[in-house]
Length: 242
Image (cartoon, rainbow, N blue to C red; front, side, top):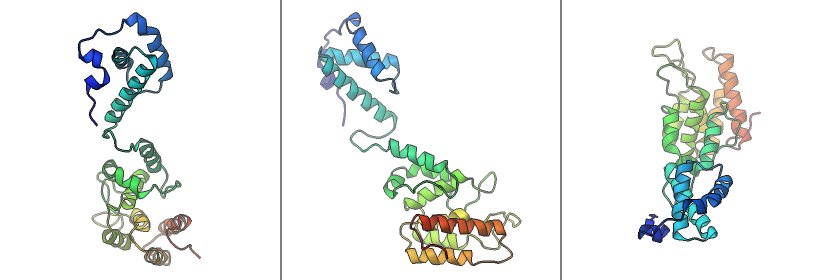
């Protein structure tokens, strides 16, 4: 959809004079009070109002045109094209999901919302599940949750998600090893939310990890794995722990 100045304000586009500012000042103040939440600055609001008023001296018509102009500018500033569904509320929900603990205590976002926002989520993920951070080593909760969203969107892939999950607790994944690494709980969680992995495969994966009592894994690592099992079972991704 393309806005044409002749369609919005034909009288202004044809050289007609704008309404006297003193005549519309009271009406503009009324509209401004009703639109405190707008992201458009007051000078821009006033210009839009005068343009809308010039196209039709009717208050109701001016209000409709002004509302259309505001929505067009607000939509353009959010980077989405006119006519497409807006994902702004979903984007706010995803940001709240990223800020949660790991594993997140919020409901999993729908895969279609994850796919619609995968570009900026990929920047937050800073790599794939199990990747170390530079600088630093361990990804924080926000980074792990961003990788979860990428897996929900199908960006990681079934085979790659399974491979990284199965290698999450290898003996060489330690901060004492060279190169340093970590126990990739995020890779396990990403495999559990991957939509294309069968439920029985996910259940077998997490059950085998929780049965692992090797001395190379400390009690904190094993406790986190049990936490992931309970978390995934509560969301219906796997069968529950015994």
